Length: 92
Image 1 (cartoon, rainbow, N blue to C red):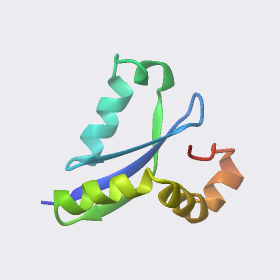
Image 2: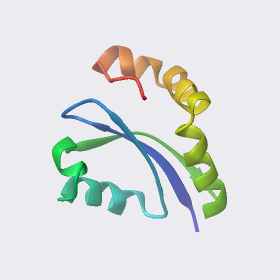
Image 3: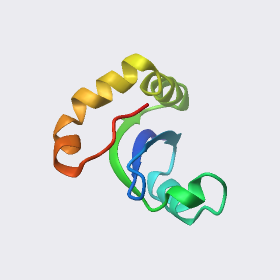
Image 4: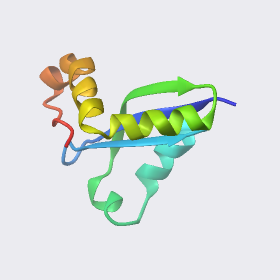
């Protein structure tokens, strides 16, 4: 089974959300349909980046890394063009 580590951007406040799932389309739809705090105030979300892994352990380790300071720096460099063209906020 394939697992995905993904990055969404809120089209409302431009903040980023990093997560992990084995069904990317379903998970994005769940985020956009969520009535739970704080997601309900930040939707709609748009997928801007994802990575595929062959197992859940690697995918969750990658998610943890991308949420770290070094991982956010990696994403900032990786998505430099996106941020320049769409006013995407830097990850915190």
